[in-house]
Length: 251
Ligand SMILES: C[S@@+](CC[C@H](N)C(=O)[O-])C[C@H]1O[C@@H](n2cnc3c(N)ncnc32)[C@H](O)[C@@H]1O
Image 1: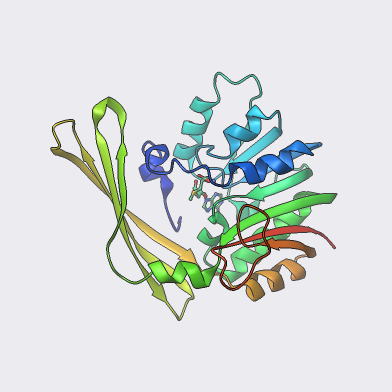
Image 2: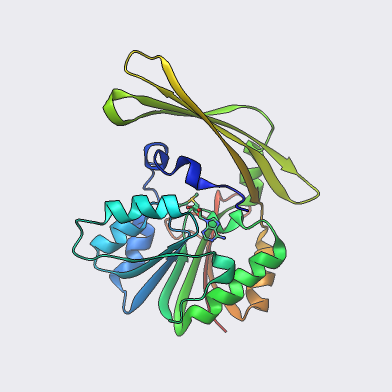
């Protein structure tokens, strides 16, 4: 069972996630790139497509068949095509090693069980070349918890196909017992006359992982912490940072 089943919203994901705030960060690594890259939890390729356009030899993994179908469609006209694989990161088994492995956009936190998080890290370690890097970008939990207040928040109104529009709202509630956030995302589709023509709900469940907890799991899995950035401009992580972006290497 998936904690957030993106199969239900794969066709509209790109409309409400048009962000590109992290692309330059990954592009900087791409400039010095050698060898094969592995992007885990790639979704519809928000980060993959710019990397492919930079000439990166990329394997993309996700366990949502529908998200991967969208990615496949979007890469049809690219000369540099990715290898696309449907697999659970916790059971990652590709039989290859990579120079760089990344998990963009806080997606690692969608693994909510601590044991499974560790399993994923061990699998990732086994797929990393000896001098490779693993980049795992997360939110700083003390920032993220502020939006987990049980209130409805409107994410925005986004243009959709044929002059339709999509309104997305959500509520998130922090659960201290499980140190995770549960909630729901609401999707409303309006036609060009502003008449509501469709409605969807998506259950949300993700964990808030502290710096100490992530570093402990990473060290136990054989990694060393190379850097922790607090944003996508390579600033050092502090308690006030919005993000908690780890760069790990093999110990
Ligand atoms: C928030 S989306 C991010 C997609 C993309 N990386 C981006 O930046 O837009 C999270 C993605 O992680 C995938 N995912 C979550 N848990 C996974 C797991 N255990 N194994 C593989 N994919 C997973 C979901 O299916 C979804 O496509």
